[in-house]
Length: 196
Image (cartoon, rainbow, N blue to C red; front, side, top):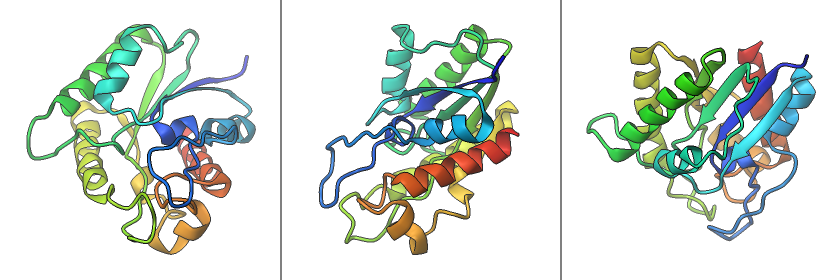
């Protein structure tokens, strides 16, 4: 039996490549990080990423029964890029993220849950999706704290060495936020290394 990994997240899980000079237009491609994760780990990676989703929106989606958890060995959650989290004040996003994790623990008691910080985003104003950095920074801090307090395994993709301001033109070439093929492959490699 192949290991089953359920991937939950936003456009960075679903596999949006972004479009040069554009914002808010989906460009979802087959070669996303779950696609590469399957190849690297010889596993079944189920992709339940949803473009544009926050933890709040994802919780609604989850409660409607849209995520197939049966026989999951691992659940990888990567949310926060679209905002909603704050390490300083209690937010609806924080509460909804906590509720989502609680439901996952309840609904898949045998699966190991891994939560990811959102990865690097650009601060270069020449990229069309510049403007996410502040909300991502808040989400990264909040998720790190949450993982530590709740004793949940953390995959700190914000610290993945492949993603820096210097590599955006290779890893996040279209809009500085979404990955290209090289970026999704590198993201999958980073996550796989952790899961192994």
